[in-house]
Picture 1 (cartoon, one colour):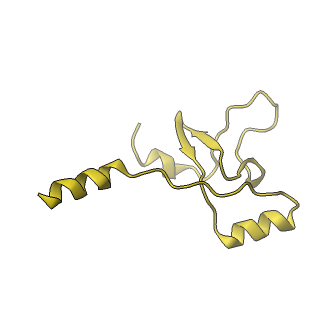
Picture 2 (picture 1 turned 90 degrees about the vertical axis):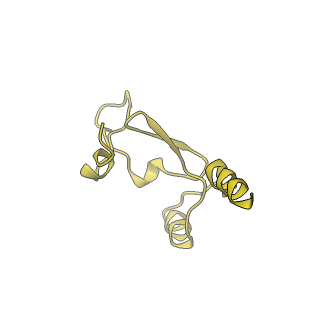
Length: 83
């Protein structure tokens, strides 16, 4: 699968047994969940203030933000460049 495949379709298919629900919607999103997008998992760890206000206006409570995962590549590069 080419990397551009993620950008081809703005509607992301969701794996569900519920008939009629074939795409992700804003109601499926929240901090702390993992989205399965074309067999790759993306963890939602944070959102901006606009998104928090939007969800609050819609009556959905957002979960608290999580810490960003440690970037091991950047850490390794920093250690290599120190030598």
